[in-house]
Amino acid sequence: MTNINKQSKAYTGKLPHVFYEYRNNFVVWIESINKYYILNELAWYILVQYDLGRTEDEIMNQLSSSFRIPKLKAKFFTCEFCNKLMEIVKHEKADVPRFVPDLQGIDTKKYTHKIYKLGNKNVKISYQDETLQRILHPLFSQLETFNNSSYKHSITISFHDKQYYLKVSGQKTEQFDENQTDRLKGRLFITIASILHKKAEQDWMMAGHAAAITKNNKTILIPAKSGSGKTTLAAILKSQGCTVISDDFVPLDIDGFAHYFPAAMSIKSGAVDILKKSYPALESTPYQLQSREKLVRYLVHGRMSDEDLVPRPVQTVLFVHYDPDVPCKLKRLVRFEGFNLLVQQSYIMPGQHSVLAFMQWSMSVKYYELTYSNTEKMLQAINSIL
Image 1 (spheres, one colour):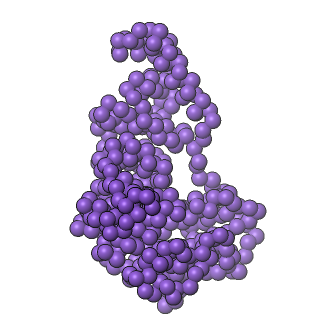
Image 2 (spheres, one colour):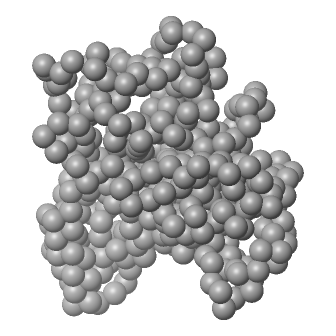
C-alpha cells in the first residue's frame, strides 16, 4: 500500500510536499506547515513548477502551453496561486514536538508511582501530583497491577513553571504548554499503544479522535469532536454485539488497521439514563472529576484478550450527529468531503512515508454521514453498512 505509484509522489525541492491524484484532483500535504489541501489540476501544476524552482514567468508560459490557455489568464492563475502559497507558508507553522533537557532538581521519589499491565509488559507511570494523575490513571486503573513491581518501560509526567513535561524511558523529554493538555494526552496514548502493540512510532499512520467498532469482520471508524456522543454510541453498539476497539482514541497503523486501545469509557451524566439498562452497574458507579469542569463515570472494558489485540482493517468511516429533529438519515459522502472531515479529527503522523500511506488509505475507504435521534433506527442504519 505504501509504495509510490503513478498516482502519488513526494517532491523534495523548494517546497517539499506529497500529492495523491484522485479523479483529476490532487490531495496535497505541504511538509513545512503539516497541512493538507485539495487542488485542481491547474493549481497542482503550478505548485509542482514552484517546487522545481521555476520563476513566475516560466510557470506562466508553461501553464499557457501545457493547458492551452491564454497567457493573460495563465498569468492571473499563476500570480494568484503563488501569492496565496507564499502567504500560507509565511504565516502557517507546523506544530512540531519540543524536546528539552531533562528536568533537574526534581525529586521523583515524591511522585505517585503506578504500574500497569499492558499485554505481557508492565509499565511504570509516575505522576508529580493528583492533577496529573487525573489525566490518565482513571482511564487505566483497571490495568493497575500490584503483584509484580518489575517493569520494562517508564513514563514520568511533570508540571513546572506553567509547562508540562513528558519523559519516556529511552527518549528525550518533551515539553507542552499549559493549554496543551489534549496534545499531552495524545502523546501519552500513542506511547501506550506503541508499548501494547509492540510498535515504533513510525509504524503508525494516524491517531483518530474517534470511536471504532467491529462486527462480522467489518470495522467502522467513527471520528467526532468531544461531546458529540461517540462514547455513548460505542457503548450502545457494544450492548448490541459489536466489539469496541476504542471509544475515543484509535491508532491506525501504516496499512490502515485499527488497534485496540484499553482505556475505560468516560460516560457523562447525560448518557447514564440512556445506558443504565444495558449496563446496570453504571448507575452505582461513582462520578470522578476528569477535569476542572467535567464529572464522568468510567465504564471499564472486560479483561483484555488475545482477540482484542488482533489488528482490524478499516474500510468504512462514519460521521455521526445527534439531531432531535431528525429520526435517522444515512448519507454516502463523496471521498473528498469525507477526507476533509477526517483530517479535522485526526493526527496524521508527519513524514512522507506515513502521509503517502494515509492518502492512499483515505482515498480507498467509504465515507458516510449519519444524523439521528431514534436509537433503534440508528442501529438499523449502522447494521446496513456493517
